[in-house]
Length: 267
Image (cartoon, rainbow, N blue to C red):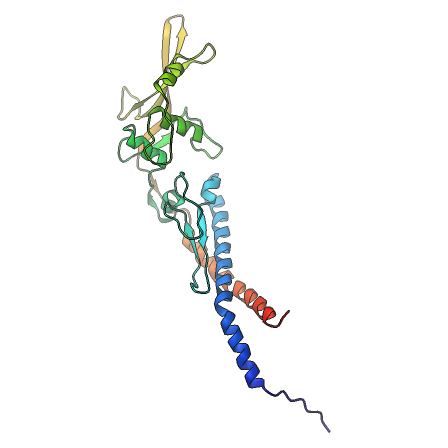
């Protein structure tokens, strides 16, 4: 004697299940792809902290994820540039990440920064020359010239240049700064486009003060003009992306498919 358990309509049930899963597949895969892209983005940020010395928040935030959809089963981790669309943040006046990260990824020459373009426009910085901080420059915690100093230089040389900087130092304010106060020496900014009396091309802060011998002056190097810097490959952007994708895509898809099946089963 035996008890027989028989399921009828199994073929129809299987077909309906397959149809339901197939219908949900594009969205499931899109979510898995987007999660994997965000995993890659997180790994790229961690790598920047390792290969760069004190990377700025601007650099660490230099990537964005173009998310996948069920109609477009592709998710991409991109470097921010001036012409970002989709879900990328709004355009900023800062130097786009692609300008300073791409040479670290591919090697070669670095692109001009926005304030360098502004100073070229003003006739201060020669073409094909770039800027590095001088020993008298105010430096931020990341080893870069402070925004305050950069803005002061841009304003002093009276340029807006259409590249994200506004404001100009008026002649009246220049005269006040040049005169100084009882507690602070007067100063002005001067620049040399070529070597001058043994001084490297660059922007200098010329300070004036009184001594027993009368009015004296001194030059402090603020921003030095140098030839185009060359970079070696330091940031393995593509290698990290491929490694994380190989590790995480299958995992993320399996988890998302599990969630999809739970929803289909009403759990």
